[in-house]
Image 1 (cartoon, helix red, strand yellow):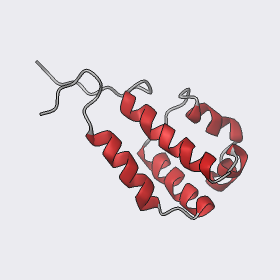
Image 2 (cartoon, one colour):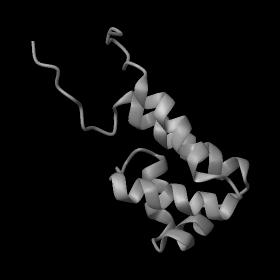
Image 3 (cartoon, one colour):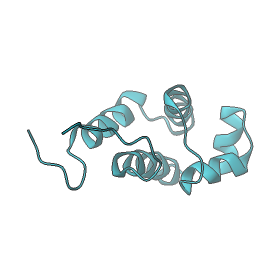
Image 4 (cartoon, helix red, strand yellow):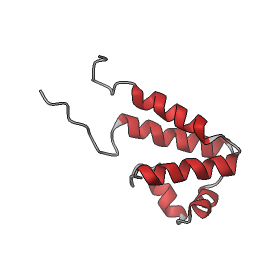
Amino acid sequence: MTNRRSSTIHDSRYGRLIEILIDRRSEAGVSQAALAAELGICQPDVSKVERLVRRIDALEFFDWVIALGTLTNCNPKEILGEVYLCASRPRQGEEET
């Protein structure tokens, strides 16, 4: 049986990644508008990503981590570490190998 990777916004790992980004932004009291300004995008685009309507690619993800690090005094490595721990766990319904 072939192990197919899902590339959907509904993948639990992607959802957790976005939760981490939202948590970091919210905990620091940074508005979606402030994050959007730092990223050079519109606030509705931030909202769409946070509501899992729009998916960000790998480069956008790194831009978000760097922007959050700049706005929150958070070390981007901490955010990446959290995401790594989330992504390294098996998805729901998969067995650990």
